[in-house]
Length: 275
Image 1 (tube, rainbow, N blue to C red):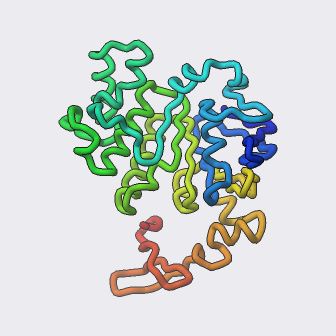
Image 2 (image 1 turned 60 degrees about the horizontal axis):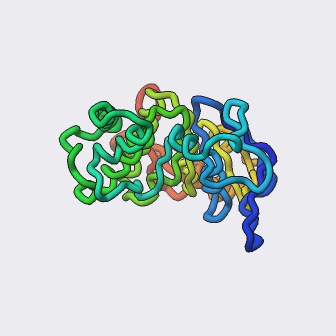
Image 3 (image 1 turned 135 degrees about the horizontal axis):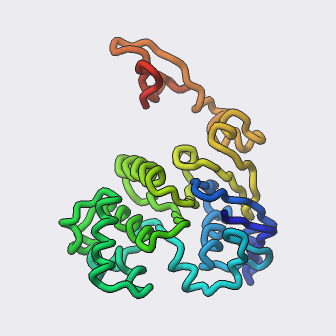
């Protein structure tokens, strides 16, 4: 479990990125920070691996204050996936994935074997192992980034808008892949996005933030959609615009679900809804 207790972050220029933030992140689940740019969500994420240290308060992992931990060792024990993959351009795919295991003392042979296993896990053919990042598509690069984040078999995986730079079709594929991985690997995932639909798709717990990392609402996607905390949250998730209101429309191919603007959102199939 990850705990934020009375966390604040002030910068020398007077900027207040985070103000008195408190939150518990349950183990073996996905928590998504969502909000507009500059609300402090990435700052909170980076406090978990001490890429950013708080000005006040404490971050604890399984009850232990991480301020007393060696920052480099802590970072190597926590998976981190960023936007644009952040791959080393002069390393091959396998070498990129094996970076952290190599830094932790694994042999070249062992770390390469681990890299090949993870390539399969994230849906990459092992024939790509000796390619360089510029030889991959954006979606493939992001899969390599996810594999690298998992290479040390961390309990915690931090993901900072990892799918924001790819096209919508690839993004949907990567989201589906992440849901599959979480079901298989059972990690504690902390995910940052500005896309509320992505947050609702991927999060067991969703944290909607305003400037200064002010918590507007924390809950499951169903809780937030059914009971938005205030008018701002209702507007942010699209409830006031009716974009989440669905109705059934009969078509020649059978019943479909449409939103308030009449756009098809899915079709009804026996036993449930197919989106």
